[in-house]
Amino acid sequence: MQDELKEETIVNKVGGRFKLSTLIQKRLVALHRGSTPLVDVPGKPGMDTVIQEILQDKIYLDNSGNVVMAVDDAPDVGDDGGPNLDDL
Image (tube, rainbow, N blue to C red; front, side):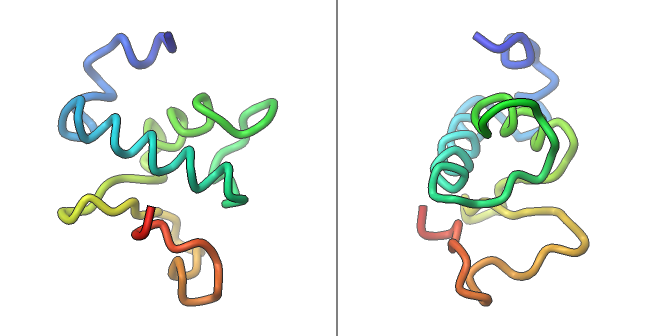
């Protein structure tokens, strides 16, 4: 298991273990479908990438349980034909 997941910091940042699990699962699906990683992590994008995106406040769940990217220069997801994370 990832060391970051053993600490309460990441759980509290997201708002609970269920929300953390949901966010990780949805973001992993998006990455596997070709979404661009928002952080530089060596190797193929996966769990380490998602954890770093969460810890660096790059992604979060909105009130409806949809993944939101908190990047200033990121286009609206879905508007440009890219993957729509709300449907994951």
